[in-house]
Amino acid sequence: MRCQDRSACLPCPVRKLREFRGINADVWQKFLARRAENTYRLGNILFYQGNRPLGLFFICRGRVKLVKEDRFGHSRIVRVVEAPDILGDRAFFAERPYACSGEAMDETRACFLERRVFCELFGQNLPMFHRLTQRFAQELGSAEHAMHCLSACPVNARVATHLLMYPKQRGSNAPLRGELTLQESRTELAQILGTTIEAVSRALALFASRRWIAVEGRHVRILEEDRLRRAACPHLPLEP
Image (cartoon, rainbow, N blue to C red; front, side):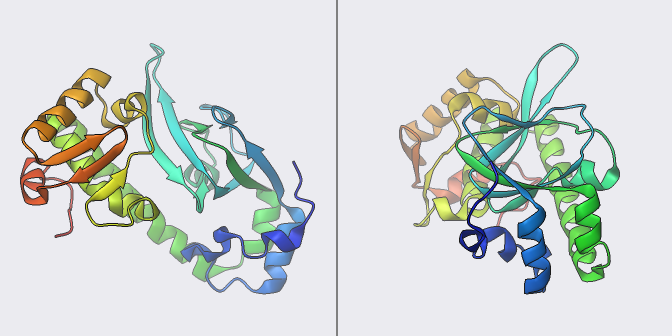
């Protein structure tokens, strides 16, 4: 669905991303004029694993989960991308097929810019590409930590780490220290942590029984952060 009112897109949160710092108004107007805007409902697919990227996605509102399927048909959520952010960038710049499928987790608005147009508008912007390089390096480090955690840490440690890291990853969703509302369902949380729904539920129940956390639906209140921290994966950097 093409955006009809460009003025409504001028304060778009995507422009506030670090990668777009310093983009002048003229280039931004060209971006607005030549990008395609779409709204995706819960469960809609933005792109499929194995397809080649024809352009780059910019998530303006909502969340997208990156789902990887193996040859046996088993799926796992690799990462959740929350607006504002760039999506499909690694496949785009590597000129390789998508390693995962992108699926909307709720109503999501995204802009799409064709490869040719992206290169025309931003191809000579060296500071932007430097910031993108830094982004890739940070994401690679996070992915290495996550893979180490999945292979070396028990489920309880993974759940504890997820709870402790959640406010940092979803800052807007945690207005008070120690208070958070999990946006993912138990099924999605299990896929993210590489385990089963039952194992996630047991871990949460265990922490609650020890009064480290209080759980009410998707709302979690961390009562004993130090104890939860000691139970978490030692491989992931946690801020004090």
